[in-house]
Amino acid sequence: MILRGEIRGLLQTSIERIKARHAEEEERRAAAARLKKPLARANRVSMKPRRLSTIDGLRPLDPTENSRLSVGSQVSVASTDSGYSSIPVDTNFPSKPSKSEKRLFAGLAAFVKPKKGNKSISPLERLGEMSNVLALSDTSAAFSTARLFEADSTAITTGECVSCFDDFPMKGNTLQSETQFPPKCCLNPVPYPLIPAKLQKPYRARQLEWSTPASSRVYCSHSPCNSLIPSIHITPSHQLAACPTCHKKTCTACLGAAHQGECPEDPALRQTENLAEMQRWKRCYACHAFVDHNRGCRHMTCRCTAQFCYICTARWRTCSCTDADLATLQEQVTRRQNETEMGRRAVAEEAARLQRLREEEAENVRMVAEFIRPDEEVRRVEEERERAATEERRLRREEEIRVQKQVLLSSIATRYIGLRMEFEGLHLYQRSLLASRQEYATTTLSQSLADKLENLMISHAGALDALSTTFRRDLEALESVFEQEQNEHLHTAHQTELKYLSALRARADSSTSIAQINASVKELRNKHAKDYQVWDQDRVHKIEDLRRAHASQAEFLEWKQRSEVKEVRGRGEIERVEGVKRGKAEREWMDAVSVERGEILGEMERREAEAVEVDGGLRWID
Image (cartoon, rainbow, N blue to C red; front, side):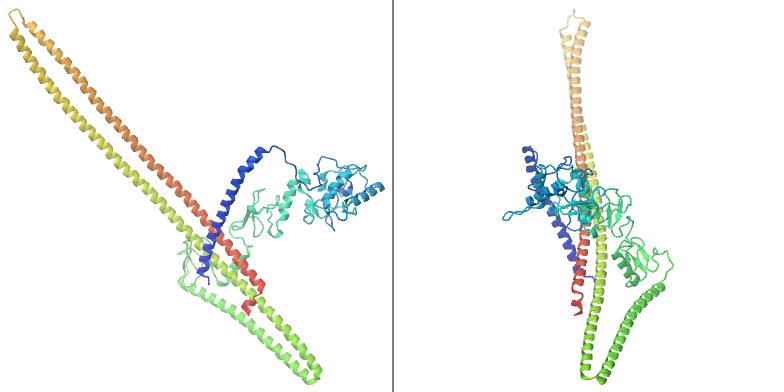
């Protein structure tokens, strides 16, 4: 029975662990940012080259320098007994040291041995001192530090230790044997600065490979590559490992090439399939999840919304199965469970019967022995019988403990399989809810933007209509004023002309001709025409000014309206982008929580299994 409280506890625990991990990552980034600037200033201020850090008394060896060291002063690589050896010398060097060299070695041995009352000297410090001493001696040989890892067994087969000067057989390349790695001199690892530059890269690769536990190593399944895949390129949740060298993928369950779907070599999958076979569970044709039939008809609806027949797992309404077939299947499952239970009971009854027979036989033997043997023999038989009974009880108890452990481990596996199925369904349900919520938010945002744009279009159209109405009203008012002024001007000009004509006729005498009067009237009319032209030009200018003012207002209003539309669209785009980012972050968060739940379940299952292995099931038996 899966407890809902456990699920709620795991949900909260997974979220808290992810939050704590995120906080630690933020603190680590902040600390790195604080340290970055002072380090940069220190690098700018200090222009001196750094000295290579070495052990006191041991100077770094130059790969191109011919050292004047003896055979016994070389850094050791491998050995069968003490873990160190010497590097072979050049072929032109004598295979065995001369007597003078032996005497020199004896003097050096006395030199490197610690004196009483003084501080002990490490073998590497002795090596540095011996290098300085041997550099002044007549005995010399051309050694290169590249020989640290390149042993030539054909040139020489023995060497001398730098501490005891004993001869020992040479070994091969330390990079080819995990038992001889790392290279040592008198049980002390050789410092990394002494390793030649051309061997540092393979040295680092071997160090990374052999520092990884053998049970945790994953090698590339691509036969031409076969390189170690670092743990950072392994995805435990998907059981996949991507090779950074050839970019091929490897299944971490079967260590073969990556394949689609679940790995058939996965132990958890095998247990689940065995349980499904025993319980006659079916798989969904769409998502391939296991489905159990508790009650109801044969119409099944999976959590992925796929509908199918429980009898033949075909798509719903595409098969000819009936409810009678479902009843037959249920009877088969029940009969199989009953047969399994009856088999278990029969085995237990047979074991009990055999035990009773053994006990009866032992009792009969005991009674016969008591009857025919003397008291001393009876006591011996009693003691032997007691020891046998004690041993039998011990064996029986061990068998009970073993069986109980198997039952407990099986129940734990079944329980956690159910929990994983619950969490998988919960994750799919949460993903569907999240997708629905994001889809609703996107639809709402689009509808809100469309409503805002529609309202802007309505308000903008109203503003343009109002501006046009105002312009027409102002134009009509101005034209009405001009029409009134024109009528007044014409009336005034006509009255003035009549008065002027009357005055001319009144002052005219016999000498004034009609032509002179007409000329005077014509001159007056020309003056009135010029005044009218001036007035008409002023009228035209005022109308043009009004039109230009209206055009300027309309242009400003259209620019303002375009700005408002652009602003609304920009805000809508910003909200859309923020919604997409928020949706992506929510999906990543949900996936991270799901992965963390799986890891927590794995840890809990492992702890319970370890507890069962430790106490041996005694807690449940007692």
